[in-house]
Image 1 (cartoon, rainbow, N blue to C red):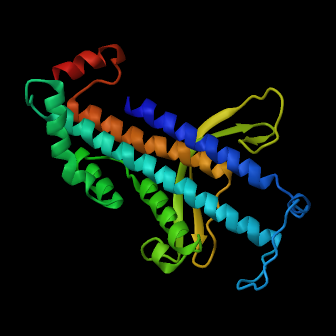
Image 2: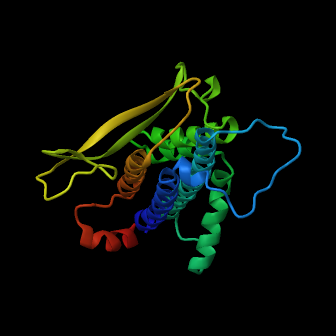
Image 3: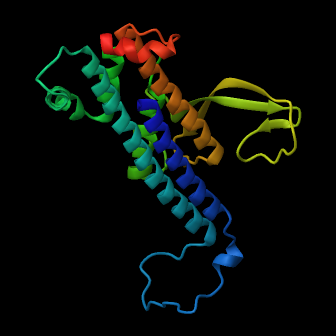
Length: 257
């Protein structure tokens, strides 16, 4: 349930991003400069006139901010859901109905829900004894903060501890063919003999640089988010002693926990 619902939300997010990415990147300066039927002229200008490149940059920053707000909201929601599931599986029966039990779990999770995003990740990492880091989720939140507070221009406040840059770590499925790497932005056509391998990659933006991700970066990000949540789901299985290899008996095993 957690994995399927999360991926449906992430798929919608990526589709929306694809729409805005293709729409803005397909606009040319000539098309933009075509006069409208009605133009407004103001008598006094208080801000300098922007050229096409600056307008495009500003719009992309605004779009990225909206997109990453939504992405962090999705991650936040499913971190809370994962913690609720984890809490539910560890509790003894409470009340006479499933609704009374759910109210009991909701009350139990209130303190967790009030924490900020990094603290929630720290708590779920500790309580579930996660073997792998959720640092990518922390980094996504850091990127969102930079876009919101500094228009995507990296300051020292955004940088990794002790560094002069902000980084984000991708772990994604890399598909390589004899004609080169296949990606959402590649132009490789025809049937290919491909190799697929999970790849680790770090993207850095140094202090004073502007944060900018293309569509392929965000595809890598979706893979990375999925891997983080797989770590969480695997740990829930481990805590509850469920054998993932016996998929047809998982439901029955959960009922017996």
